[in-house]
Length: 136
Image 1 (tube, rainbow, N blue to C red):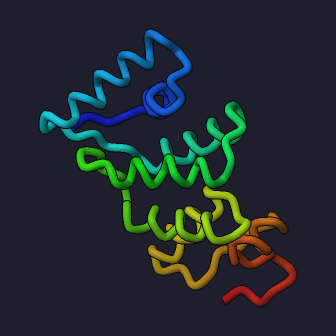
Image 2 (spheres, rainbow, N blue to C red; image 1 turned 90 degrees about the vertical axis):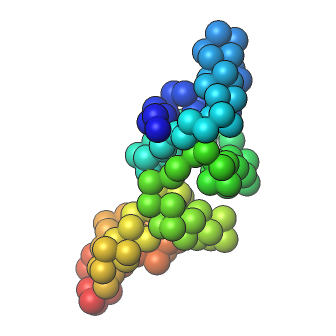
Image 3 (cartoon, rainbow, N blue to C red; image 1 turned 30 degrees about the vertical axis):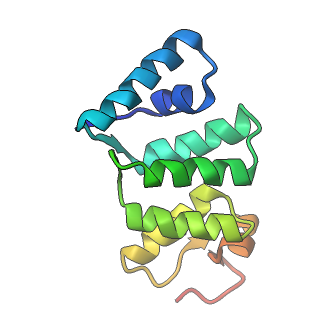
């Protein structure tokens, strides 16, 4: 198994650099020969940021990319069950993907709530805003 850095994922998905994209394509093709690739949640968060900030990808496009990676047979996603919950939350709501991932990772660890100073995160992801709600 090999680990994939965010920039390899970006080159494969965007196909924006002829040389690096070709190398990423060859790597992904080699996965079908039995080699597996590991993607961390950090790389997923970075990927979402790059796609939204640098490529103006929509929420639907980003969701499709993440789902495609999650469904790829030879790609192992760190904490896949948590990522699926975060992705579902992201697709169905207004929260951004990192906030959804923070929430679901915290709940999976046994936290009763997630507190934040971020008004948007509290409103959109179901976190608790410090100072406005009772912390459980």
